Amino acid sequence: MFQVPNMLFALPEMVLLAMACTILLVVAFTGSRKIEWVYGLSQLSLVLTLLVVLWSLGDWGMTFSDTYIKDALSDLLKVFICVVNMLVLLYSVNYLKARQLMQGEFFVLAIFSTLGMLIMVSAYHMLTLYLGLELMSLCLYAMVAMQRDSAVATEAAMKYFILGSIASGMLLYGMSIIYGITGSLAIHDVALAIANGDGNETILSFGIVFLVIGIGFKFGAVPFHMWLPDVYHGAPTAMTLFIAAAPKIAAFAMIIRLLAEGLLDLQNHWQDMLVMLAVLSMILGNVVAIAQSNLKRMLAYSTISHVGFLLMGVLSGTEEGFAAALFYTLIYALMTLGAFGMILLLSRQGFEAENIDDFKGLSEREPWFALMMLILMFSMAGIPPLAGFYAKLSVIKAVIDVDLLTVALVAVVTSVIGAFYYLRIIKVMYFDKPVVEHKLEASSSMQIMLSANALMVLGLGIVPGILMNLCTIVFA
Image (tube, rainbow, N blue to C red; front, side, top):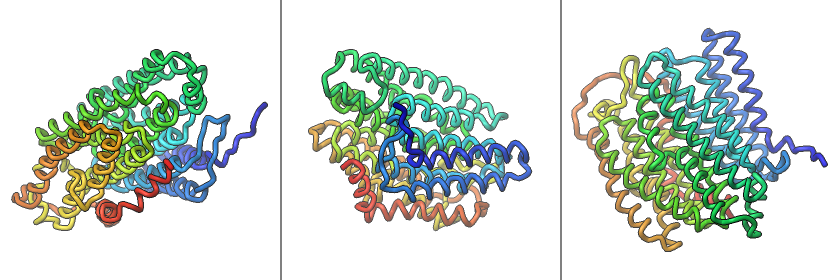
């Protein structure tokens, strides 16, 4: 019998889709003549989506034949995805204008990619999840390649596209194996079939291997990290910022839906895989980052190490661990937003502030923003009383609680190693003489929001309970 779906559960996605189509038409008819309109409509679409999400808070359930879920996790992640992408667009405007990249295509791709993220967050069926993932990924591939006259950007886009396609194929193959054993792609039905002992565990574990490969690629975990440093470095910084922040929140939703909600009864099969990914990511990410002189590449390897910490919370398999991993993901998105925002802030026409030496003497030139960068770097290093410290502490506690002491020890040691390259940036800003002298060209709105971004990282470190309680409620 056909059930009438509850359209209200997918209202944020429908609003965003309608706005994305509107923006597409405006771009088609006006080209680059009304680019400010396109930017304004893009921000408006994210604001409207955010307001719809907030308006519908607390009204939870499933729709579209149980393929789509609206719950506390989806609501929280959608709020953060909208806010983060609003800030990404704000931070990117001056950079794009200075490089003639302020094109309608960027905003169309950004909004459609955001739509893919929202679908991933609410997907409760493997095909729905895959469709959201592909919508997001295809837009990201195109964004990296937007600077067509740059050989580095084109090469990065090709690597990203080819490796991303392989990872998507792996993910799809894993889903097909699980479908063959359980007879369903609905996450709830898969969990029920496994709980009832249906199917061969050996073949299911084979399917899980392919799922973990797909997840590992989307996160950039070792050994599926090959694309990440080249894409971060090769793409224009505005595109790098978009790739680095919100998609990690969507990828977190994917790992929770698949492993924590669909395959939790097979935790003994996927836990060891995640332990390997987490340990290798923390070691390689932190060690290789030390050798980088390019800040974007350094932040790429830093991201790999952060993914290792994030996976620690998931592999614990406990509600406390999932809450800690969620907290870590949200704090990571804010820290990354601020760090790449600083690169955009200091960049100007004909100058990319992407090398560590470009930050020399920043405390003399711009003492306020040197302080903001110091807060962000200290937080990434995990130094109290900043949000990054509490995030690392919570995931380490999660693995200690399940007696994975070796993983916790690796995390502590690699955190100490990681502190070196973060402190190097602070040393360059405060103890070296400036190499370049120029005034900031960024808009006052960007400067204000970037300052608020960094201060939020400080505030959530001093009072982490506000966000941590929300994360705990989500998995209660």
